[in-house]
Length: 284
Image (tube, rainbow, N blue to C red; front, side):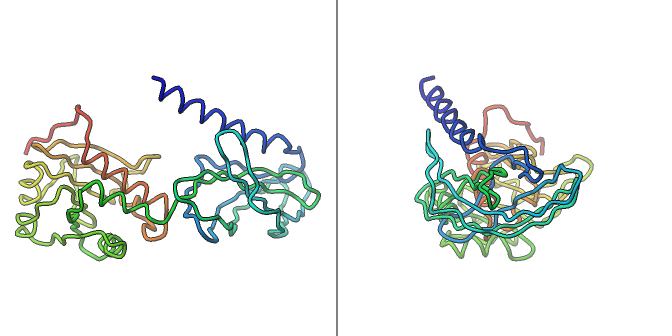
């Protein structure tokens, strides 16, 4: 209870810091459309940040946009360097333009919150874009989850396996039934494989046998009916002592360069390895 209250207090102070940054927003023609939830980026370099500018006026607007980055703590917003000119925008009446801005994010050792303040040449605040910056070792958490054991990967074309191997994560390629039979790791990822049809989950016999023994499986599916929510989990299925998580294949988009995708992959692995007590049972 005290931990939850402390978390709420920290989040409340963080929101106060953001509110202070937003307090100076003017009612001018061009403004930044807030992004929610905060964007996820890697720290330690120039990162692409999406920002939307809207012109609610009845006349065109031309504005020189400046960028000032702040680091958010539990109660304050500390500037990171000074404001710099980003670019000049021309926005038509009623138009919303989507831009990709390069933001220099300092190196961090743990997930850190930042806020990019967008100003015009006169210092008027156009809006704020919130960011979560992460170190580039997010996928190392997978090693801890499986205790250093190899992670099984079954995919018809290279992708996920290459990303994991590039980060020094032991991988076992699962192509044939004998590969599944020999695999003794705790976690496996399945991608680019035949999927469920008409609501039926089809599992290869070798995969099913390993799941019954306690293997945790995350199965990425490309079905149009599957759309990723904030946490890309579609369904959790109990198979004997193991668990199969169904997740949208889009959760892997840009995995080699996306902090959001890497965070999602780690979270899916956590859920597969530590499933809730109540799961939908699968009858083989």
